[in-house]
Length: 139
Image (cartoon, rainbow, N blue to C red; front, side):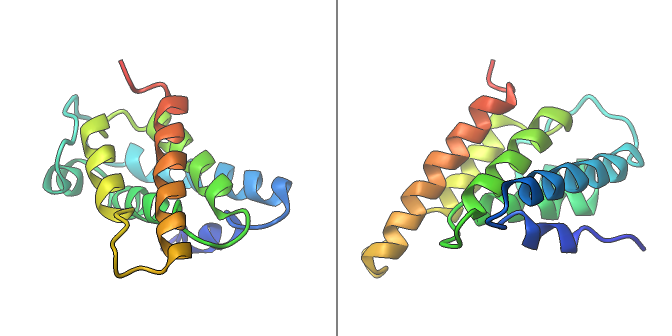
C-alpha cells in the first residue's frame, strides 16, 4: 500500500526546493487517494464528517499539516503551510469552519507552556490563517 509518511519530514527541510517538491508529491498522492472515494458534494464541517467523506490519508494529512504549523523546526511552518494551502484548494470537501476548529484546537497556547512553545503556537495560527486565505476557499 502506498504511503505518504515520507513526504512530511521533507516539508520541514531547510532546502526550499526540497520542501516544494515534498509538498507537490504529498498533494498529488492525497488527491489520488481522495479521487478513489465516492463522489460527493458534501462538505465536512466536523471531524466525524471528515472521516466519512475523505480518504483516510487525507483525513490524517489535514490534521498533521495543521499540527505541523506550530513546529519549532526551521522550515516546517513554510512547508506545512504550502501543503495545507494546496490541499484545501484541491480537496473541496473540507470546510473553513473545520479548518479553523482544528487550527484553534491544535495551536492553543496555555499558561503551562514555556514562552517559546507559546510563540510556536501563535505562529502556527498565523501560518494556518495564511494557508486558509491562500487556498482560496474563503468565500
